[in-house]
Each structure stands twice: as structure tokens, then as C-alpha cells.
Picture 1 (cartoon, rainbow, N blue to C red):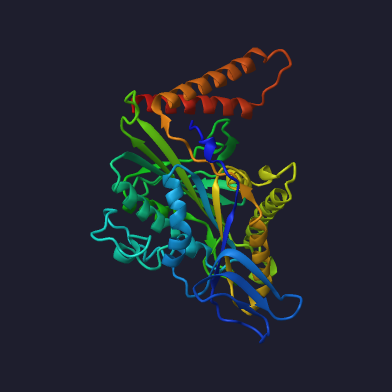
Picture 2 (picture 1 turned 30 degrees about the vertical axis):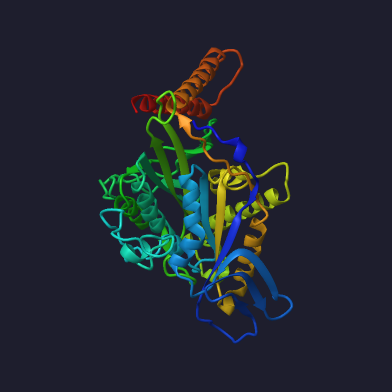
Length: 442
């Protein structure tokens, strides 16, 4: 239950950057080519026949020689700074199978280091304070964000809490990738159940995934270990485009709570809350070209359906339609606030410079170019007093209790409340009571 600082509301376009992966060209020679800057620029040009020749302009374009550190410094480091200031932010990777989405977000899990502490002996050059000293060059955006987050928090005198969650959307079913793991990512033998429920919380929390565990983490080492444990559980399979293609969408969420002690005239603590969603979308693909058959083809159909809905949502937002079909897919329902809401959002569109992937590359670039037209209104979560939070929670509990009583009183008068709605109200009331009690104890 956090308040928002309306005085800083300002519409901003979604930031869109492109990353091009170098790949050997297979098949016949062609006069078509994808021209991108070696490391960093803002333009992508496709040359060849009039039917494919075109150019695109983005907030940033990273060529094949761009490193993970280059992308973190220019794209993700500023986003983390916003999270530390109390904004909700989202970074998601979109592109054809095999173009490096998961590599960009996670990196090479075998080479990602997990130091026991988040501080480093001496700062390195650049925004990524840990990349040179303690981290593999192959580490992706998630581990880099976690290391730099704890580095920044450790320098502050304020008390802080960091929670992480990791959810997979596979064939329109949600699965908690961290269920049954301890704080360091070790399994306790519990097999996570699938098909978690998504609902609107009716509070400033927005869309909530019921039953999704949030793990409290106290170090970058433990946070990265959880990320690795969850990544190992994701659905992967071989296709013609990628030997280890991710067959699911995955969302790794970092929630940062910072409390500064007794800074008001009344001697109360004030707090701020930031959240970062790091989304690795399953690869868009042409089912025929990818070689998908049977189960793989059904997976691809489900993936393409959710991405199609994402495209419809983008179209509706850009065209300022009166109705936006967020609920047509669980993916768009979950990331609703990231598309046209109060979240700072950035898309990394991944492409290949291989000539035989030119059709998919053009589609990705068109998709990304259209996404630039979405306007969000990011709002910082205002620093709030403990007493305000408890008061708001108590008011919310009272409203839920009134709704439950009304449902019971009207049960025999023709007024109907579905079982799902009743259970949702009960769940919200219970969760709110638990949160209120937790805040009272802080």
C-alpha cells in the first residue's frame, strides 16, 4: 500500500534498443544484408531488394562486438538507479529463437560468479562496479543487476530488504520456479505446482500472482544462486534454430524496500519501494522453419499466441484504442502495468544478421519500432510513513470484510457471487491482515 508522487508524473515512451547477434549465413548467397554498428549506434539498415530494403531508428543499437558490460552500462544501470529511487521498472527481451534473449538476460550460467559478499576491494571504471573485479564477462543483465544492487545498498546507512521471485509461463500455465528452494537456491525436494492464479489486487499492487513465493535475499551470492536454480527448471528443448530454446516466458522480479530511520519531525521511519521485472520472452518463430513438431509445435503455437496478444496490446496502445486486450493472455495480464501504465519500461529486441533469418529479423524490427510508440506514465512510489501504511492496510481489510459480509447476507436473495470471486476476496483479506501485522512488528 504505497502512495505515488503525482508531482513527478510525466508521460514517456517505452525505451527500445536492439542487439544484433552474429551468425554464420546458411544457404544460397544473397545481396541482402543487415547493417548495424560494430558496438553501439542507433540505426539498423537492411539492404537488398526493394521488398526488404528499409532502415530503422532506435534508442540504441548494439552490434555483434558489444559486450554484456556495454549493454548493462548503457541500458540497465540507469534503470537500476530508477528502482533505487522508488520506481517500478521492467526490462524485457523479445526476438526470434536463437538470437540471444536468454544469454542477454541470464548470461552463461556456468561462468556467472557468485561472490560471498557484494562489496569489491576497489571500484572499477564504468557504471558496472563489479563486472571487471568479480564477474564473468558472460554474466547477463540479471546477475549484473543483483551484484550492483547489493553494492549500492551496502554503501547506504539505511535498513533494506530485497525479495526476489521467478515465475514461468508455459502453455498458458504459471509455475513458480523458486518453490521448494531455500534462500541459497538449494532444493528441499518439493515439486512446484503449476497454474498459479492471476488477479487484480484492488490496491496499488496492481496485478498479483496468487501463491507465488517471494524469497528474502541478503546477498548477491544468494540472489544469483536462486536465479540459477530457477533457470535450471525452465522448459527448454532443441529446435532447428536453437539447441536449448526456451519454451516458456520467464519473469524474474526484484523488490527493493529501503527504510530510513527516524527522519521525520515525529521521529517516524520513512520508506520507499522499488520493483524491477526482468522478462525473458520465449522466442518468436516460424513453426515450419523452426522444425517444431508434435509437442514442440504445440508449444510454439502457445508461444506465438501469447506474443500475438502482446502485439495486439501494443497496437491498441499506440492507436489509443478505448479497449486494450490485456486479459487475452496471462503474459499481457501480468505485465499490464509495464505497457501503458506507471512503470518505466525498456525492450531489448534481439536479431540475427544471418541472411536466411531476414524475414524474422524484419518482423522483430517492425514489432520493436511499433513498441516505441507506447507511452507510460512512470510514478515514483512516494516515501511513506509506517503509520500510513498500516492505516491504509486496515482500511483495505475493512472494505474486503464488508464485501464478504455482503456476499454472505445476499446469498439467498438472488445476488450471486461466484466461488472464485468469494475465494479471491477471502485470500486478499487474509494476505492484507498478514501484511498489516508484519508492518506493526517492524
